[in-house]
Length: 134
Length: 163
Image (cartoon, rainbow over all chains, first blue to last red; front, side, top):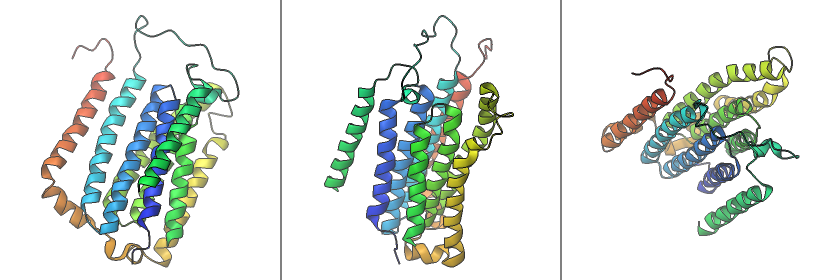
């Protein structure tokens, strides 16, 4: 018995991907960009697993494993880049601290509210296009 | 049976959202680990045991990485004693318990084979395909992982180290 319909799994994968994409566009600090990329790669791997389970083939799992390995490599190199301590002359000047209620999203002060609105709107459009196309 | 998968998926969505909206990385890492574990649970319930094992290894590694970071964060902010206040781990623990309950229910009541049925693709099939038609891809993926490891070591090298 195949208890899990294809639709639910793909919906979960698309939701996770949109969360990661919105985070990738909205956040400013490097570690969170790495986290967002890892979330998006995991979501695409999950889509492969769901499709592989639907047709009972091992190829989906193989692709998911490849995606996972790529995500691990990207996370390794990305987190190393994010943790690197630059020397004082090549380090950019510290941005002013963010203020306001949503400052935790603003990290380094470079983000604006409209950027988050744009990110979420783009994510919603992507989601709708995905669902409609599918 | 769809309830367990739905619960795991819900945990994945909640944990990912929380991970992405935290202010500091040390706060986000436990949620990211829970998110990976939840995705692993979904894969396991879908019958993909190999991918679930890999995801769970990544999630466990992230949580192990997060524990000292969270403790250091608690010490830096001076909140509580050595960052041992329960609030920081409360929500990740609740999400993990939810996952555990979902998987435990499926394992004790139905069993994994009953859930995925004939659609389950075991490790044997995956291993055969990995070492057969996809052999070149496997080798390339492992070499990519090695390259990522070497790049991380090269980037994090201390400045005076001329090796």
